[in-house]
Each structure stands twice: as C-alpha cells, then as structure tokens.
Amino acid sequence: MNLLNKTRVYLIGGMQNFQNGDSWRREIKQELQEMNITCFDPYIKPFINEIKEDHDARKLLLEWMENEEYSKVEERMKAVRSDDLRLCDISDFGIAYIHPKIASWGSAEEIFWMNRLKKPIFIIVEGGKKQIPLWLLGMLPHKYFYNSVDEVVAVLKNINCGEKPMDSSRFRLLKEDCR
Image 1 (cartoon, rainbow, N blue to C red):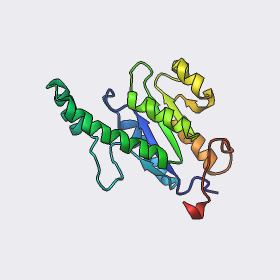
Image 2 (spheres, helix red, strand yellow):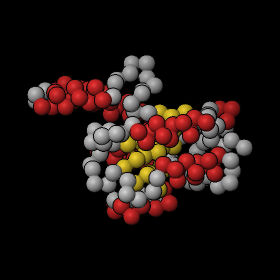
Image 3 (tube, one colour):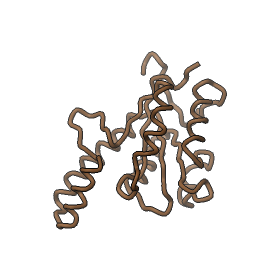
Image 4 (cartoon, rainbow, N blue to C red):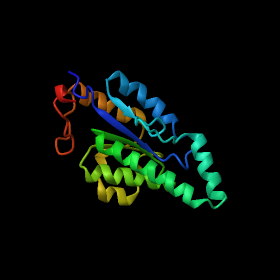
C-alpha cells in the first residue's frame, strides 16, 4: 500500500531567524521522496517565475532593511508571501518546524492558512511538545505536534502503508489517478 503516493507537502519553517533553516528540510525530504511525496521547499520554489528565498536573498533583504529601502523589501516580500501561500493551497498537507521562542511570522501565517484549509499539519517543536505555544494548542489538537523529524517520518510511513488511519477530517486526498 502506498496511500501518500504522488501527494504534495509544503515544508514550513522560519527561515529569517534560523541559522540553519534548511537542515531539517534536507533531513526529511529524502525520506518523503522515497515515499513518492513531492516536497515543496520555500528555498526552491517550483514556479516558472521563481523568486529566490535563499541565503543570498535574505542577506540582500537585510541590507535593504538596514539602508531603510523598505519599498524594495515590501515589493519582494509581497511576492514571496504570495508564492508561499500558494504552496499551502496546492499541498495536500504541511510539515512545520517551529522554534517557540523565535517569532516567525511567515510560518505562523502558513500554519494558520493550512489550518483554515483544514489540511493536515505535522508540527515539529524545537525543545519538544512541552514547548508548544499555548495559542497553537487553542488552534490545533496536540496530536499534530511532534518532538522530532523522526517522529513525523515514522507517522507518515505508518499512514502511507495503512498501519495508521489518516485523519479523515483533514486529509482530503484525491484518488491516486487524479493526483
């Protein structure tokens, strides 16, 4: 059985404030690609007119902020925001990595948006589930929060092979021949 075959996941995780915002993505992408899950990574946009959101782009944005070139930052970030929310729209589910002590406004909006769309979100909490921001527990059941990347991968593998049932109230997967 391969229930998650050809599904799409958006990998959410604060990039502005994390020194290594892409390390957890590299770790999880390999596992998910082996299950034939397409990973949408904000560092590597799938759009024809890709707007770079890599380390060099971040450096440029911070330079513009330092020089008070706010209109340039605004223009670029509007496009980034639009692209990232579109990835939430077209994904079947999301995986987020959050650092509760670091504000990450894009991640917060993406989690909020996917929740409004009633899509499954697997949230990895730096420091473990005991660190879940209280507000998020008012938004999502605690069963959607995890201590590590490995825990999320294990759950997805169990869903994929049929050992763990999908949360039918959130997973709205198309039939495989329609994906």
